[in-house]
Length: 241
Image (cartoon, rainbow, N blue to C red):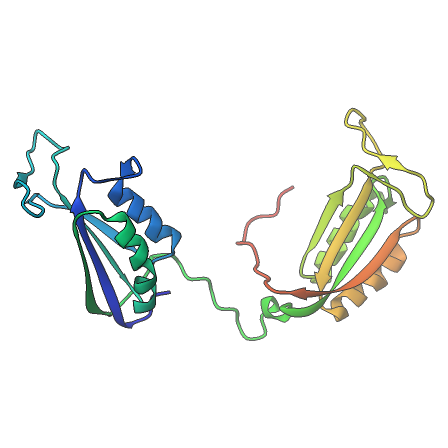
């Protein structure tokens, strides 16, 4: 993020017809600046001008492809401008390359900033050491008339567990050693199901206590230590049926 304060302005003046490996040079430069994550670049097309000892070119309303000077301007931190210069020198065979001192007064991307988590917000609690709870069951397992995996996810939500994901495996076996294989044409199959939940140890322990009353058949339940490096909630949206 470009900060307010001293910065550098890189100005490149080339010809509209200049090419780089068969492509428009100014487009190639723009792609380079975007790839290097420069703060921004602007291309301006002149209405008249000349390069070196070349002829003077003037725009004509009936001719939009006139060979005119093009000016590319970039403002960014001095260090980033210095790093990009070797590539610019290599690409610009003719033209003018300038560097000027400037001062950034304001830099805004126009994007809505992400809301800062409130003090005590649940989003903050998860960053760092946490627990991963893995539950292996069968797709046909039920609890009070509904699929067990759905009931587990609903229970996790009631307990305010940070998140839960359900995976359907294509092949697997559990404690009974009977292999389950996914059958694409079958209307009903007992595919292996894996449910993963990640949260603080206290939340995972609460979930474990709930599972004691929910799971009565074959299963594998395991807990692993994990480190959460980022946890960002999805934008609010209505629950799907």
